[in-house]
Image (cartoon, rainbow, N blue to C red; front, top):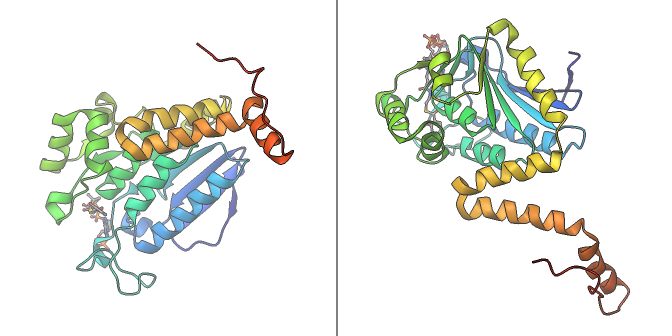
Length: 272
Ligand code: 2NE
């Protein structure tokens, strides 16, 4: 594929081709651990992909074949979060903002995982709509080992995905699980040989691109609404308003206001 690179990023790569955006964490020397800068850039790139009407699907991945992402960069972890030259000395946990952004993005996000998806990196793939794993992928949480935890999506979305007992095991014991186990547990959608990872992921993206974008948007909202509580309902309600705006009935209300007349809704059915 002839990926076109754009954007001026230090820690990530943003590329597009044929309606697909690919966002890559590019810190392979640290197994693609993220620092605050990485997350500022990821949030920007996800926003670019969301706003681009040409993009229908987003692939989220890590550079190289050793890791998707190994979570927060422990080497720059301060006493109140992660610190780098963009944080003005204040520790940040801004991966949480990215998790929310992936959930709220109305376009499907596919995690393409080679190697480790560990710690906060594991949570990121859990937040994605789908995960395609290479046969060398390894999954797990490390929080209780390194002095951290994620009590948000990292806990209850994981539990919703694999069940409570397994979520407890993953978090409490900090073991690593291979790709086949992840597949068996419903933690990933498919496992393919490493050399076929991108080909397979792009194939899934192409299948998604053939589908109705509005139907996918509504389904993502619906499936997220249950775990996202009021925020999930808010998004779903916003989408309902979007659909209503697109109807002749709603447009009659708008037009009547602009034309300074009483709206005539008489021709619209009062549906049972
Ligand atoms: C991922 C794992 C198990 C891989 O082990 P191995 O033996 O295959 O590789 P190695 O040698 O550990 O890693 C390769 C290089 O990447 C660095 C390593 O330090 C090493 O570089 P050198 O020291 O040799 O120069 N590296 C790997 N992961 C890193 C990280 N997260 N931060 C900084 N450097 C990292 C093994 O590397 C591992 O266990 N990594 C740590 C995983 C981890 O605990 N992540 C943080 C969890 S907490 C979190 O992400 C979080 C949260 O829970 C809540 C909010 C925000 C963040």
